[in-house]
Image (tube, rainbow, N blue to C red; front, side):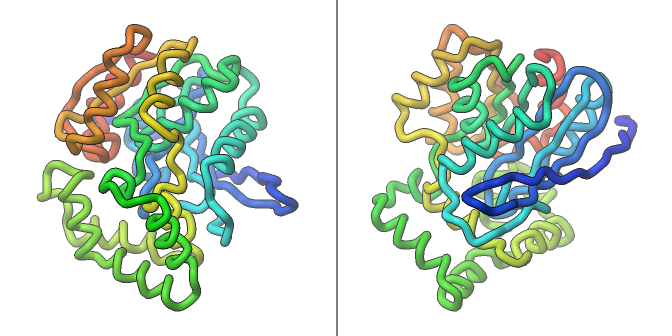
Length: 290
């Protein structure tokens, strides 16, 4: 049984375009630093990776982050984009850690960790990428970029956007999406579980960042070529954990990374939400590498 590890919640004050934005993060354990980054999604929160954090906190000082626009962080009406998150992650790491940090990141969070590590590897000691992705849902579906941008701008509108967002965050729709490509065991999708996820979507300003993610505006890479070039150029030890039941297109991108000679890999049960659904084996694989 995993022993509960005490934690403390703090807030990073990030300066961006003349504004001060508050970002929540949680620290637990002692030792060498490890930063945990949750996946981007409509219901993204650091809590989804907390079970992995508890295992790692037995030997490391673990910091769990809520991305700006998600979780307990500010959800301001901003133009959420790739450049914003790259700059934010770089600034947060520089401000928070006094030594090179290991990063354990899921989904699109893994893509951002790769990008920032590629730009400044001196800040990183190791990378663990859990079910890493670089394409947002509409892009995976093949929706043309102009149409996706139109959807994003539509969701940002006061009344129409709020209505569209509400339709795509009903409990029934959230359960459908979890069954499709996030969880593999539908019995875990209890009414209580879905209600907790639904509550995340109902916070003030909750639609702005997820709208950018779903429509491809937060994709950390522009192409598979960039995805592979960044990965093969990483000069730090890197391991990816592939969810065996991941959607075929996403899994193909993970397996392309696994074929690179400088990257270790492991295949474990799970899909895009494996860091939450199968936290124990994922944490053990990450811990042994770290």
